[in-house]
Image (cartoon, rainbow, N blue to C red; front, side, top):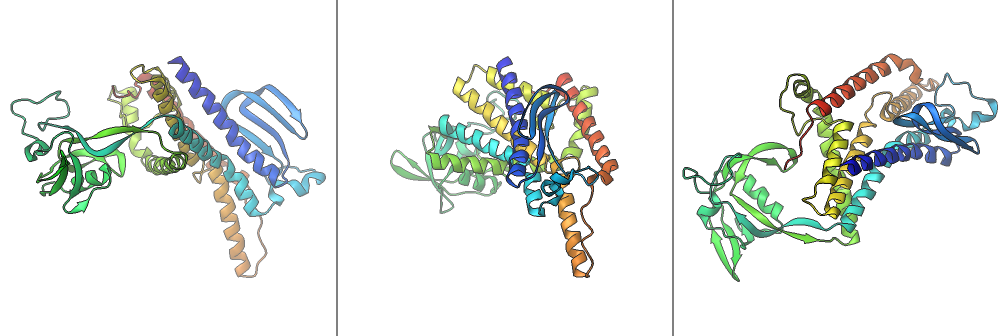
Length: 402
């Protein structure tokens, strides 16, 4: 487990460094003057100077920063540096510099996912049935009991090895197509054509309604149609073009899930509090802090029931998802996050455009220092949430399913 935790720490530190490198690289590309590039905060642990920039590590590994001359109106800028000050550059250049750190997290996620898809065998569902449940059981039962009703699939005559050809006259090209139709058809009979021993057989199952994972948001459940069949999986290694496409689609899915999760944070706090201080069961679909993420990463690497390549792949997928979360979270329009500075820049430009429409001069930049009370409030809330998450991850951690 220690190797997974160490790997988690290393990748997080590299992600922080690359985040700051995104700001640094774009600032340099636009001719801005960057005097410091540090990972961490607080006391200097180690540093060196190359050209006009000091690079180094500080004692508290809780982030990092690049100091670009002219980020604040109140900063005293030497006359020689004035042309290279941040605020002297066009708005589009400032927007790119401010967004580049978060963009790097998506680059990191894409590289990690592409590496996994290119080097680790993947598993996908086929349209062939691999398992037919003989009965309808509750989620806690380990087998069929005498009182359990026959499953809709068993009653209709499905057999392992059947390949689903069509449903209600529509060809089935993928297992997900078939599952979607079943989910949408609770209580309504279906005409399903399967290929069995080289012949086509028509079956007439009627899905029943059960709690199932939401196909559009697997973290939630919905009432949906259920037959009691599972697809036969196959192992494959995607070609490079497919792997890159899969990586892009995975980032899109992670981004959507992250936005939904961020919107649900207020509703998740009560469970987090009860699980931490009142002994309530921890919601496995709830919030997890950095301690919990590190522990989960360690457990994934330590799981000897899986081959090493699969464990490394799962670990890298977790780290890719975490980078997507960080990238999106950092772009929230709240100071002191990068998204807060981007929001200020956009408001500044919209205000300038409005002034031009009425023939008035550009009122200039909005100094972030004037919004310090709001910034401090956000920081306090973030610290409180972080402390609660760390405590919860220690006292009542999220448990991986067996």
